[in-house]
Length: 251
Image 1 (tube, rainbow, N blue to C red):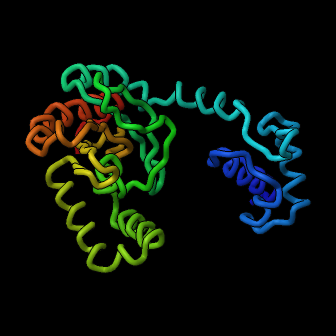
Image 2: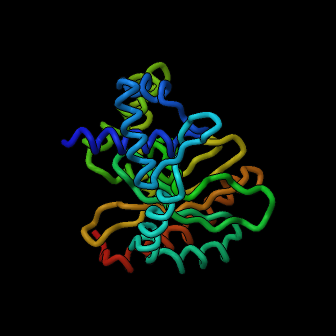
């Protein structure tokens, strides 16, 4: 692996993930690199137009160049294109916020959404990445993966919170994923965010792999367990039509 490219991409990721501009000393400490090394990487990123330096503070942040490439990539994404009309139809039917998430390793990325029409909107940005097992959207994908993927996803949670993700909790996660396989959908009741419930169904690729999920999301006082159950047939139907557009013909 080219270490120069690796350092450059890692610094760029750190800048993009931060809410505030970053300093050379801070980045060098977090990345375990010398300040001169980080400074050279930042200077190159500035020269190429991927980063910018605040002359008043000497700190660095990303430019819109990253957004430009991200937007172009997203606009060509085949899953998002296949799902667009079906998401609109689902939104019209349920009048709630709907999302499309794609799997990326052990994470999910939000790639599209249509907001509900009320003021109790769910704050999730396009491009947001989350560990898959933290959300109904991710569990709807991970549940249908091979055991090795499920093991790795559980280990990811164990590494992030070893006290909470003990053997008993890991066993409960496995049982829950088995139930999702049986039901064909996943739910979340105020687990990821207080006051928010959701239900998600997997989207399948032409080779029979779960690659994305469609999600209905809203406030728990309106999306009660009873109402979530009434939305499941429409949700699964939406995911199935998107899967068919992608070439899926059933398992």
